[in-house]
Image (cartoon, rainbow, N blue to C red):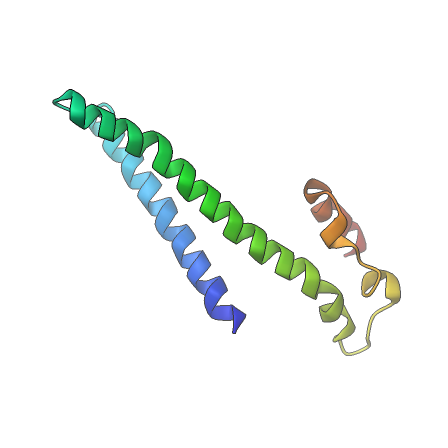
Length: 112
């Protein structure tokens, strides 16, 4: 059930990356994306270039946080489901959801 959500999230991420690259190429060729003929168009271009990317980034980060927390919650049960089981310190006593986000990869790497 969660696999389609993850696949669609990856697809959206790839589309966003392609869109950013397309806009960067267009900006480089035309000398900037905010090319407008009138002041009304300029204000709309400013809104698009400043507020819409921020809104997209916020929604994207919320989705990423949701996926990240699901993975952290499921990790102890994944460890227990292995063929030989798992010791308590690498399964039920894992505290990934409560760790500082930047230190989790280091801690996971140490525990292998």
